[in-house]
Length: 164
Ligand code: FES
Image 1: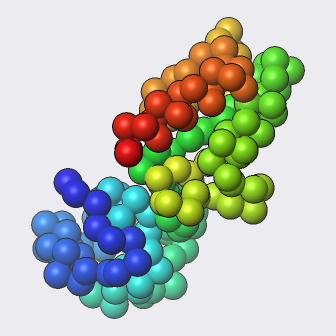
Image 2: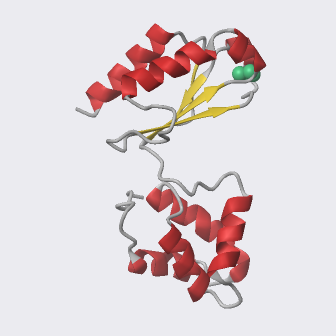
């Protein structure tokens, strides 16, 4: 499924999703998962729309459900989702210099969750259960073990080159 312009809500696309789930309140989680797949996050306008279209729901309820589950993001995500593990093992073995190298390479100060070009989003996470490979970085589900500042910089340069 292609990614929609995250700044513009396409109501016919939302209707298509709602239709495929019979506009049912009991399908709300699946509907939100689908919407997140399309936009890479849950735009506020989409949640309001869903809340007004499904009987028995309100925008506030949809918003409440979306914020309750960690799987849902209310912020736009980049094409590449970078997760830097900062659990104890990774921290001790140098996750912070790796994180700083990513911030420097992508020009993302701490206040930024997504790069200006919309390509990368960055977050720190707690232990990913791969402590033997620390420090670990995960990009779109792919695990990069024993990262160093130099290694992650090369990985990012390769992705940037691929994106032209
Ligand atoms: S602390 Fe990073 S994988 Fe466990």
